[in-house]
Length: 218
Image 1 (tube, helix red, strand yellow):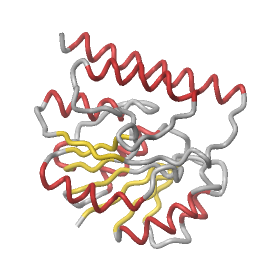
Image 2 (cartoon, rainbow, N blue to C red):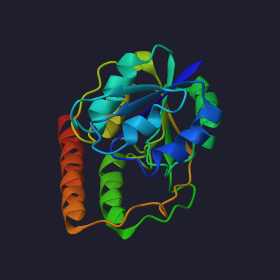
Image 3 (tube, rainbow, N blue to C red):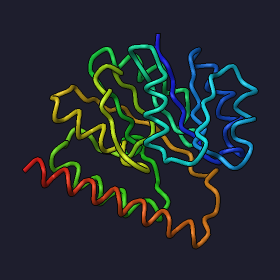
Image 4 (spheres, rainbow, N blue to C red):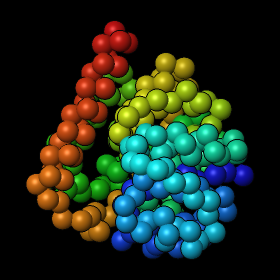
């Protein structure tokens, strides 16, 4: 038995098609609508899933933490609700979790071609994280499977929980494995100038978090 937790924010264009595929792969699904201002919540409610709604946008990290606190199964799969990563990978991740404590996807192993706006920042973060966690080649990947009991102390704002999960796994000497996953960026919305600014700021925060971890760990 496992639970799938789906953080989603303003994904009305993608969440419907995504959930159509997800319900084929899992029975226990929690969608955390992180204060969306569009129809994400009402679309998700049409499916046989549990939907939790934050009253305001709190960031992906808090959406994941809410989902993990709500889940009751020992195994939890995390997957973003933007439909860029396919739910068809979930059975393999659950199976791989039998051998470890955390499974994380790796888009590079699947030959993914990143949009330029993502590539440089991802490479910088990968380089920093690999200094202490070389077994993880795609630290910001949104598809993961984990043993819930090992990650009850997660923290982070924005997207910080992605790295916090890895750092705490390393400190606890947990077993980490990775699997190749392809990503579909064709559905990505064209970004405005404000979107680029927000994304740059977000990656800057993640880079700072990676540096802080490296300094703290010596």
